[in-house]
Length: 126
Image (cartoon, rainbow, N blue to C red; front, side, top):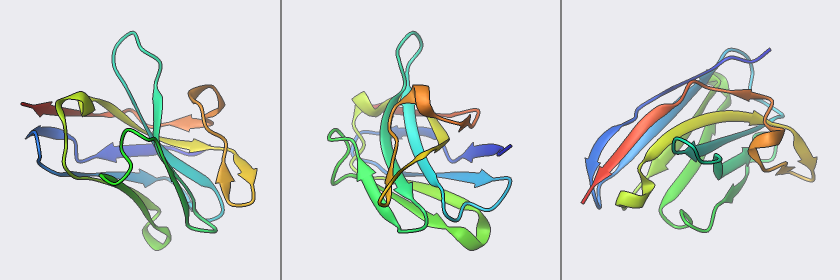
């Protein structure tokens, strides 16, 4: 079982930046890690994933060019650097461990996630 703990959320004005961190209870090498976000009553959506063995990243269209996912295998950490934040980025952000789809890609979709973190709130004001 993998435990995930997020940190780094907060409130920021539009155009600002935040960095989210996710600490895993064990090694994150050779697995798929990602960030999802969700609002109450809505399905969580994939924001970014990384296949840690290959370092291959994938992003939702809504955040491409603004968000960057990264990893530090030595620290069992995954990060999400968020720049040029918009009010529509306001949500609870969740770290997730998902299955690999092979070839350095990750299975995408909240129903496939193995483990979730507890979430960290990001609020962007206009």
